[in-house]
Amino acid sequence: MSEEFGQEYWDTRYGSRDGVWSGLANPVLMTETLALPAGRALDIGCGEGADAIWLASRGWQVTGVDFSGVALARAAERARQAGDDPVSAHDPATGGTIAGRLTWEQHDLTEWAPPAASFDLVTAQFMHLPSSARTGLFARLADAVAPGGTLLIVGHDVSDVHTTVHRMPDPDLFFTARELAAALDTRRWQIEIAETRPRVAQDPVGTAVTVADAVLKATRR
Image (cartoon, rainbow, N blue to C red; front, top):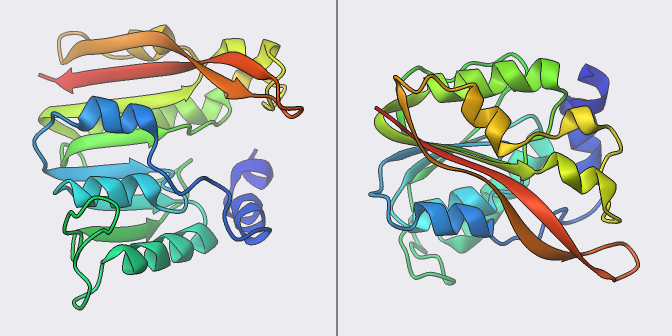
């Protein structure tokens, strides 16, 4: 597992091309955080930084964390281009000031624990690991949410394995929102959303396919 999903794997993947992802923030992240008051955010598996940069443009103080030093260097450069420097202080896409609001950290996410009760928003977008590693990671992310803060986890629903879109063939890498919600103690958490959310994607031959995202949004009491 460490070889396939650790730093070497992700450094190789990110180093194989100039951009692995679209460069745009994830739509569910934007939709579900738009009304939240800005505070301290932790973006887990931040990759090339699109989500963290968007959050910073909305006033959040963001820590982006990833396995890959290659991805983090690219994220820092994209943030600089978007305005994270003293000279150019605005994201041209949103007009929001991001200078000084972004911190990038490299950690082994299968072992690292963020500081407890420290973030007003903890987000993990499409962080797929084997269940043996994922369960512990998501528990540590929940512990990092401050009272009154939000936990937002979005991933490919396990049902996607049976579509024609490109997904890893191992169902153990995927999850459902119901599974995530069941792991939270309802005495400590208010479950706001735990749903399978459909959307349209294209498979490798260009056919439109309905896929599903597992979306969990919860507020720490």
